[in-house]
Image 1 (cartoon, rainbow, N blue to C red):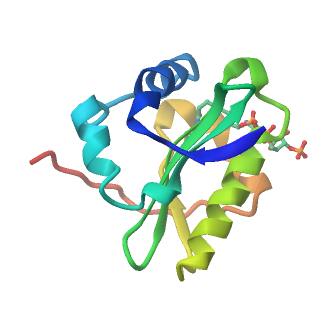
Image 2: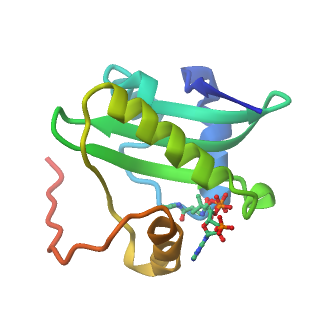
Length: 135
Ligand SMILES: CC(C)(COP(=O)(O)OP(=O)(O)OC[C@H]1O[C@@H](n2cnc3c(N)ncnc32)[C@H](O)[C@@H]1OP(=O)(O)O)[C@@H](O)C(=O)NCCC(=O)NCCS
């Protein structure tokens, strides 16, 4: 089992994994959108691979102040084996190395059950209103 950077050729496998894991994809999750994302922080967008099969993925980012966790997923057949924890630890190490002090993440309201996973890793809920705009 090893971590390696996401590459464009992983696109279909990773989209499939995200969908099977139940993540909500957006209009940014097209091949073009993903290629755009790869122009920044490509070392924070990595997969966990076992015998050539991708079983986990995270799309991390760093805005120069905060680190962000996006699209974390473990293949449903491999969940519950501490792989999610392993991926987040790896992302934290990579972010710390580039000077990041704090990580943020957002949880969809219909995915509240994942809160316990993050709490287990030391993340705390902050009461904020999240606002957004597509441009
Ligand atoms: C969230 C996800 C990545 C976790 O990956 P995983 O490999 O199943 O989780 P792990 O096995 O690493 O869990 C690590 C620890 O958290 C605990 N945990 C996992 N899910 C939990 C939950 N929903 N509530 C409380 N604790 C949880 C585990 O029991 C384990 O604890 P332990 O170390 O004491 O045994 C995975 O369930 C997933 O892909 N979910 C669907 C996609 C998703 O929701 N992504 C997050 C979007 S914000």
